[in-house]
Length: 175
Image 1 (cartoon, one colour):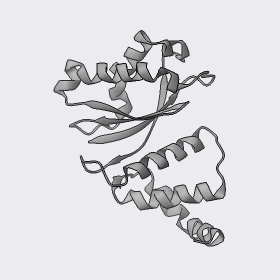
Image 2 (cartoon, helix red, strand yellow):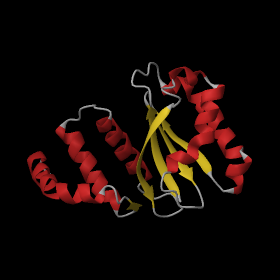
Image 3 (tube, helix red, strand yellow):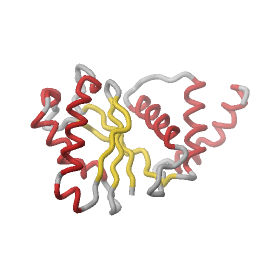
Image 4 (cartoon, one colour):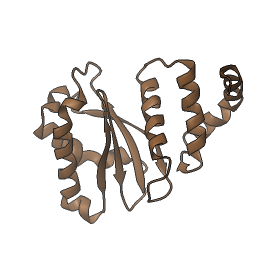
């Protein structure tokens, strides 16, 4: 199973940029991937993108996990103990996570870049950033395009409810 997870700073007053700590993040990923327990359970962590306030990672495992972010304990523990990010801890936590969806197959889907775009935009909405109508429509259109390839059960009711709105917005925007 593959899980794509957005990690956002848990500290609401986070100052700085995760990009500045990219080397520490890379070291924590190497530590995670080399930990004997993770090797035996075939867990592997891959960094997909680092932005100022968001870290997008992919967790691969041979078992289905109802809460995949809980499988990142050794990753976050390493960062808390071995990096300057520990100064940004909020009640002992560095990150809060948002699992947007997980691809069905064990191979990279052709829509991987679309998944990153969707996750980035959804996370921006979650942290309160505004989007213009064109960006919002683009997000919804991309969501619909990739849901067939993904196990996105959390998104299906949302997409079903906005289908009519999407058609109206598409007409207004000339699609």
